[in-house]
Image (cartoon, rainbow, N blue to C red; front, side):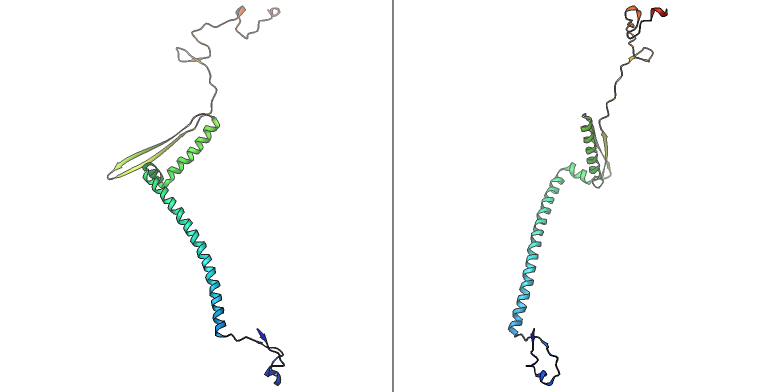
Length: 185
């Protein structure tokens, strides 16, 4: 902005104007066009940067989508994978994964084997096939101590072998039996 000097102003002679007045400079049409060109250039450059950034992101996303479509195509070629991923909206596959994780943890803890069984039943009805899944997990059981018993002819269990005579140690005592004190007889 240009300030006018009150002494040079025609209004100062009459005393009607304040001591200083802000006056907009007058721009030539050429200067106005140059200013508009500069503003549009800045805006264009800013948009170009945005487009370049978004274009690169779009290209990255398109590459990822293409890779996933390729994987999906490979999965759809395998009938088992295709069936499992579509059976009950994929919940059977999720349940199977959860059961496998739990079974693996139990096998590692107990250091013995376990099993996971997937049973698929396929039932035809008219022109449609109904497929149902049954998942059974048998994690390893904890080891329990074993006892030794002998079966008798009557069907009873005994800790002593009924076919063998009872062993009595020297003096007619059983092993572990204490000899009676002769003073107490």
